[in-house]
Image (cartoon, rainbow, N blue to C red; front, side, top):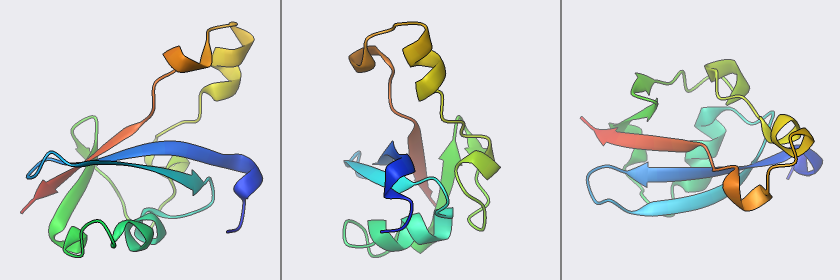
Length: 95
C-alpha cells in the first residue's frame, strides 16, 4: 500500500445499517480508492453519498482535498493523549 508511512485512521459509518468500519488509509488515496477498499464491507457503497460533517464529499479528491485535515501532529504538540484525538468519521447516506 503506497504512503503507509503517512497512513491515517478513518471510520466509515453506514447510516442505513449503523455498521462502523475502521480503516487506515494513505493520505494520497482518493475517496474512490478508499471506497474500493471498503467494498468488501458493503458492495453497494457506490449507491451511497459519502459525507463528512453533513457535507457531500468529492470522490475524486483525497481526505485533505475534501477538507478532512490530519490534526494528529497538532494534537500531539498539545500533549493530548492519543486516545482523546478522535477519528474522522465519514457517514454513508443511502440514496
